[in-house]
Image (cartoon, rainbow, N blue to C red):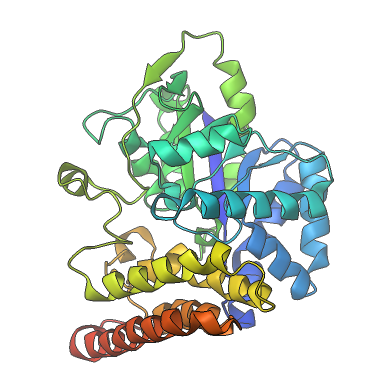
Length: 393
C-alpha cells in the first residue's frame, strides 16, 4: 500500500504560549521523532509561517533545526501557504499576495535563501479560480484539495489521476475525505489486513494536531503503521512526478473548502463556515475586516502602519470567523466550533489595527470601525449565553 500523507501545522499568531507548547509536546515533537526513527518514511507538510516565527519566539530552535535536517534530507517536503492563515477567497488580491510572499520570506529564513516549494496549501483548502491563478503566477506547481473539489461531491477522483486545473494550469492532487475524516492510521492499519487493499494508494490530509493533541492514539497505531513492511510512502511532488507518464486530464475545479458539503455547494455557499449570510456575527466581522483592509494603501506612510498591519493579519486569520460558525466537528476529532474567546481575539486585533493608525484623517474610519466592533462584541456574548455555553467543555 502506498500512503501519501499531507499534514498542516498551524497555531494562530495571536494564541497563548501554552497552546503552542501543548501542540508541540503532544503532536509536533511526536511527528518529528516519527520521521527521525523511520528513515524510509516520507511526508509533505505545511508549517505555517506564523507558526515558524512563533516557535523561534518561544525559543524552540531545536524543533526548527530538526525540521530543517529532515527537509534537507528530502524526507519531509514543505509547501507554500499564506503566512497568517488568511481565508484567501474572501480577501482582496493584494492581501493574498502579501501573505503568500510573507510566508516565502519566513521559509527562506529557516530553510535557505534559495528555498522555493513546488506545492501550495490553501488555508482550509479553500479554492477559487481567482486564488489559484495568483498561486500559479507566484511560481507554484501544484495544489492539494479535498475530493469534493473534483466535481462537487458527485464522483470520487482517481487516486492515480494526472489532474490539471483547467483554470490555472496547476497540477492537483485530491485527498480522500473518508480516509482523512477520522484518524488515518486506524483506517490504514485496517486496510493493510485486507489482501486486496495492498496495491491501493491512499491520499490523506489533516491537521498535524490530530496526531496527539486531538487524538491520543493510546495503542500507537501511527508508530505501528510507520514501521509496517507493506507500507510505502512518498512526498506529493515525487508522487505527482510518477504520474506524468499518464495522460493529463484538465478538469474544472469547484470552488470549495475541505469542509464543504454537497448541500452548501448546491446553494452556492461553499464558504458558509466562514461567511454565513444569516450569521450576524460573521456579517459584522466581515464589515470590520473590509474597512480595516481598505486602509492599508491609503495610509501606507502612517508612522504606525507596521503596528496596524501586525494586528490586521492576526485579526483576519480564518479561525476568527470559523469559531463563530457553531458547527460540531466532534465526530472527526475536532472541536465544537464555537469559542467566544477565539472570536474576540480576532475581533480585538481587527479593531486595534484601525485604532493604531495615527493620521487624523482616519477619525471617520475609526468611528465606523468602533460601531462594527461593539455590535459584534455584543452579539458574540448574547449568542454564547443564550445558545452555546453548555455545549463547550
